[in-house]
Every structure is written in C-alpha cells, then in structure tokens.
Length: 212
Image (tube, rainbow, N blue to C red; front, top):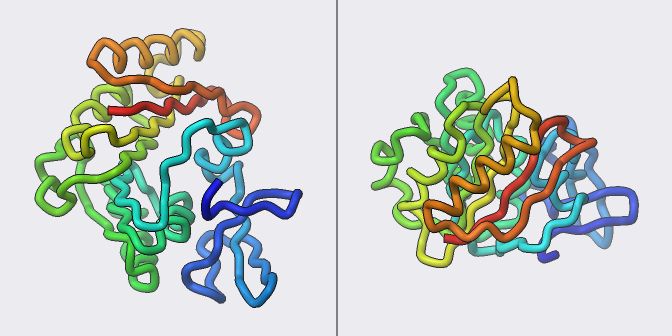
C-alpha cells in the first residue's frame, strides 16, 4: 500500500512535518526519515487498512474532500500520504475547527472549511473536483450526505463512507443498517466495491468503499 508503512507492530505514515505529533502519537525515525504511528483506535481509515482494504486510491498527488474532519486526526495522516495533493477538511463544529486551522498552519496541504456537509454548494467553488471523498459524520442521513457531495468528485473517483450504525438507527441491528446504506448508494448508481466491519477497533461501524 503506497505511502503506508509497517514495522510489524502497526501502521505508520511518513511525517510531513518532522518533529511534530498531531494527537500524541508515537514518532519513529528510521534511515533519517521520521514516521508517525497511525492508531487504528483513533482513525477509522487505519482500522479499515488493518481489517483488509482492497482499494486504496490515495496517492501523493490526490485531492481529497474530507467530510467531518473533526480536529484532524485522520486528515493529518492523509496529509502525510497525499503530500503533494490537497485535503479539503470540512467541519461544522467551531471547537474542532479551531484545531484544524491551527494544524493547517504547519500542514500546508490541509485546507480547513467551516461548513455543513449537507450543503456542498457552500464550498463547491473552493473544492472544485476531488479525486476521493472521505466521510465520517455522525448524522442519520449519512448516505444522503455522501450522495450530495459526489457532484464534487470526478468521474470514476472514489468514496469512503464510515457508517456509524447507531447514528443512523439505534433500534436496528448494525448489519441491517449497513445493508440499507449500501442499498441506497447502489440504487443511486454508485458502485459499492467493498464493505468492511470495523470491529473491534470501532464498535457498530463499517466502512463502505465505492466508485462513482
């Protein structure tokens, strides 16, 4: 997997900003290159990789639209991976957004956007066309939000949806929620390539990888 490394004990990304940790993660130097430990209990994308990710389109020059970036934990690792690309970090909550802004001061390829992911028209002009949309949002209409934002993804681009079952419907079994979300995407013409349950790293979460 390009730009993601392992020493047998865990995952690492090459630190774009040597000497700086983002969320207290361990730093490791090997052959004069510094790497950051990628904690799968703090990042669903790391959990997905460890559980078995068949499609990983994130390249050094990728443009990523990140919906629900929070304070930037996973986004910072994508910043490492897509070192010559851009990570557009959409976050609606002011408190984590302030951390995103601070983080982007040293990570120049992270672009924080204070906006509601339900309204992609508010940031369409800033983003243009992305190669990949990555969504991690705790709202009921998770599939609907993704579908709204697919207009900002190039043709044959990819979507990574981290489904939070309890945010969609707390009364249903998680597997039934995942089925419903996958079905909604498929009925909308989105090609779902893989579904991965993220237990034990994230309880009642699954990752859907799709292609526009």
